[in-house]
Image 1: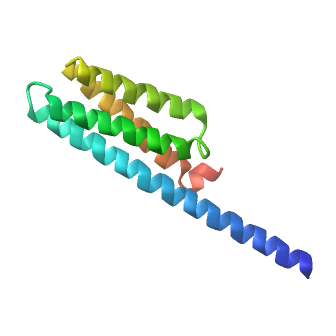
Image 2: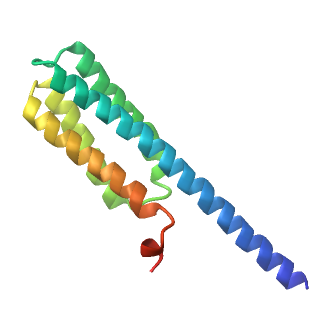
Length: 128
């Protein structure tokens, strides 16, 4: 009987930790995607990249650095490196006023962050 109780506790713990992890990934990826969407709107609405857009890109980079610390415990580092490259390139392109390259990197960063959210979610296709 003791083994059954211990087994049930282990299974419940795994389910709770998995749920908390999935919720964290969902929340943080949605926050980052929302910031990327806002930046894209501002870039498309303005003909020239100004200091407010530069500030937004720096805020996105800072947000990513905060998120990356916890995601590093949960996700393969290759995927994190791809996001890091994309967001760093985005920040650099904003600073150098490369509007077309900014939009390209925005789309790539949005895809990569959304891909992680989908890949790590509890779905039948991700289990098998």
